Image (cartoon, rainbow, N blue to C red; front, side, top):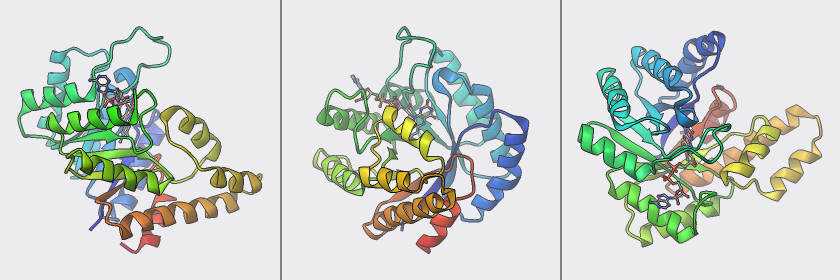
Amino acid sequence: MTAISFEYFPPKTPEGRSKLLESTTPALQALDPAFFSVTYGAGGSTRDNTFGVVKALREQGLDVAPHLSFGADDAESMAALLERYRELGVTRLVALRGDIPSGMGGSGQLVYASELVAFVRERTGDHFHIEVAAYPEIHPQAESYQKDLHYLKAKLDAGANSAITQYFYNVEAYFYFLDQCAAIGIDKPIHAGIMPITNFNNLARFSRNCGAEIPRWICKRIEGYGDDQESIRKFGIEVVTQLCQTLVDNGAPGIHFYTMNQVEPTREIYRNLGL
Ligand code: FAD
């Protein structure tokens, strides 16, 4: 059975926060996800916001996984944050290296995710189920495909329980990646990260930086619709439903939706799958 989870980012405004908690969450909770997750801004820039949203979701009784990375924090601040999450009843984390925030130039120091995983295990034992990031189309800064796989294994060997992938539209890249992971002895679940197509221009810009390829045929088809937003919407749902259906039919252990804090189109895609 394919587990489903939903990712949020912490809203910047009180209105965005109310909408997320009072309208989006009940609608997505009705789909019975395994958990929600809440992202963490580069360099800890959303620390309080992420914590606040996680707390509010916990108060609704939900299973929620905060994302976290060291950023500019020292070990004691990180240990204190882990303790605050433990007190909220959080039992799952997404552990990341993160990126250097724009504006900091190249001067920032980043702690690899494998080191964060080892730190969490050292300080909190087996309390948290730890997810890490995986890249079927390979992390943009990776030295090579093989090295990136090796570092994924290092994160899992350091004590992470499972991985969630960067989004992809080339389904073969994901299944090839699973085979390559198995070949080097990775036996933990690697859930597929899925980005529904909402704002195509933003998606195209973001994809250039994060190492996710939008296939040419998808770009061309969308370009061909011009300003016809309804046709773009329908096509996006069709393409991502097919992608998810192939994942489900071929035994992907989980699908993690990057919801962009919206009910649709995630809900429509989910319903199309008949899960
Ligand atoms: P790592 O696993 O540490 O890897 C980073 C790079 O370093 C890779 O190229 C890897 O090959 C290489 N590497 C790893 N270990 C070593 C080593 N020991 N020596 C040399 N090279 C090494 N970003 C955010 O800012 N906030 C979020 O909430 C967030 N959530 C995410 C959730 C998911 C599911 C995914 C897939 C990504 C998320 N990101 C988030 C993006 C992520 O922070 C970036 O992709 C970041 O550049 C890498 O983080 P990582 O944890 O994968 O890093």
